Image (cartoon, rainbow, N blue to C red):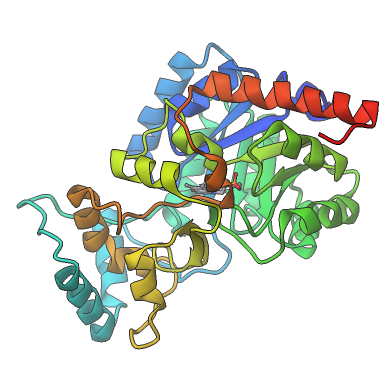
Length: 369
Ligand SMILES: Cc1cc2nc3c(=O)[nH]c(=O)nc-3n(C[C@H](O)[C@H](O)[C@H](O)COP(=O)(O)O)c2cc1C
């Protein structure tokens, strides 16, 4: 499974793991892949704590950080989180506030305890994402990745000055070309079937398109990959490695809540939907009563990023506290249909590698696997 990217990063397998969980980052990097911590949900102070922890637990193996600097989002600035939150809240119309109140009542969601105020996600605002970058670059990371657009030029230059490689996600070949023109080193070609924010072109179609459009820049294939057979397919399509997000959500190390873990284990590949109900941009998650309520044509529909998440932050916190599996936000890709048991990261990686080798052997023997 070795490709030139293994030498670039000093890793054994070109398996890149996107995760919001520091334990998964450390476990993947120690098992021979490269763990990448998603920063978006952390305040800058918390990100610092997470990265300090990874530094202590990763045994000097390489790891990366992923930030979200959207190119198209309502711009908000403020001296601190409270100022930014009140600015965003003031942009939301009465009709949407009324609808979310109505939903909390309809689903009978118990109020939060006194003082347990919900905050919502600010990581995709420009100011916070830039703070994330500053913090990440002060740690011994080997890769910085960005979702929803190319990272700004100053971020790419800063990373390169420190010898840190820059990756960016792309859902179309034109996005990939733009990334490369801006100085990005590695493109993650992420197909429709992926968990999280995702476009409309399937991995099978997208990967070779991107590979051809930006050759010789290395491409990682993402979206719907959860087995050694699929890794072999990704490399056959011209990718130099794979970038997996969903598969780690049911590992022993994952910090998914019990309700959400159970929902993943039970779901089939037909149970996801692309919805704007959590972030304001289309993201793949398990379909449930909450996603349906935001798709209801008689409702006001979701707002854009970052308004929608702040609008629903109290409801999201109430849902999380209630442990309601039928309403919980459960971002995941279509590969969820194969995520049917809880296993340690190390076992998952070894099984991926083992099945990859078996697949290549079968192909060499000319036998259908
Ligand atoms: C729970 C979840 C959250 C995600 N959040 C982000 C994110 O914050 N930044 C990002 O670049 N990609 C994010 N992604 C997308 C992943 O980086 C990756 O491209 C995707 O998971 C690959 O497809 P797969 O889910 O089929 O493995 C997320 C994916 C999942 C499943």
